[in-house]
Structures are given as structure tokens and as C-alpha cells.
Length: 221
Image (cartoon, rainbow, N blue to C red):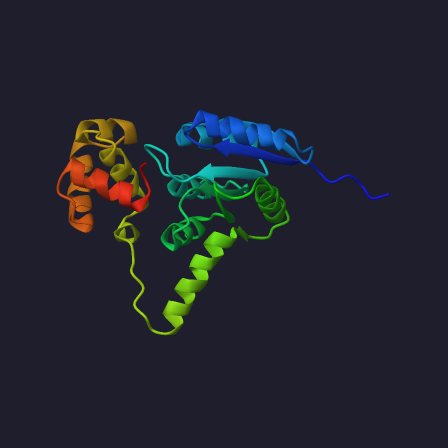
């Protein structure tokens, strides 16, 4: 008789409460998983993850204030050993590359079958990376384009530093320079400088243009 498999402890990060409830309900039906906690604010979630030490974090990408990609970078910088699976509607290769570079271990589409979620969690728990078939197809296409010498378009987001991306998220939500400075703990002058750099790098010269760009890139819905 084989020994029982260890329980995989999971933490959920998604700004939509109904999405978190749905995933908690789904995982609670499988004795392999235990949901340690969940939160809609990625900054609060980071603090709880560092305290609770889950095996796996399911992380949404599109969240106000701090994207899931930048939340991953924060967790890795603070020494979190949790495996991280990005859970998102965005299968574009630009998002995949940014997430993997930040330190994610898996990438799963929210449109995936529930059985695929179980496969993803079990795979990363064993130390194996997991990419949903939709994501894998995009990466294969990109690799082929690179191999044949075809120009591969890059997102302007790739030029941003992690701090600039945090500022960008807040500005795209309509926050003022003063609010950005307060929320990110920086001086007003630093916030203004970041805004100038963002407008130059992204070629967006108003709050409306920044918001439209964020929506096109999938960082806002």
C-alpha cells in the first residue's frame, strides 16, 4: 500500500472575490489541496504569503495598483520559495516571458478546464514548470519566428523598470501624481519624474492614453 501523498498548500491572489471563491470551492473538493488563504490586494497578499509559506501561489496578472508579474518579483526578492502559477485571461507570449523572467513557475489560462488546474498544481509542486497548451503554442510560434529571422514585435512595457510599472498601473487607474507618491511611499518629485519617463517610453501623453495603453496590453480590464 502506497503512502498517502502530502497535501499541497495553496494561496490565491485575485482582485475578484467571486473568482477566488470559485477556485477555493474547486480545490476544496480535492483532498490533495488545502487553501491557506486568499486576498484581492496583491500587497496584502505578499505579506500573508511570506507569513504562511504556502507551497503554491495562484496569481492573477491583471490587478489594480500592482500587477501579478510585479507581485511575483516582490515575492522572489523577499526570498519566497513558493511555486507561483500565473492565472490569467492573457495568453500572449509577452506576458508569458515577463512572468517567467519575474520568477513564475507556471502559466495557466482562466479558460482552461478544471482538470488542467489540478495538473498544473501537481506539476509545479513536483518542481516541474507548467504552461497551458494555449501558452505553449504562442511560445512555439515566437521561437520559430526568431529562428527564421522574422522580426518579433516587442511590447513597450518591456522597457519599463518594475518601479515604473507600479507607477504606470496607478496612473492608468486615474491616480494623481500626489496619490502615486502617497501609495508608493515616494516624494512628489520622484512620482512626477516617473510619470515623465513613462510618457516618453510609452509615447502616451495623458492619463487617458495611459489607460488605453494599459487596456490594450491587458494590465487593465
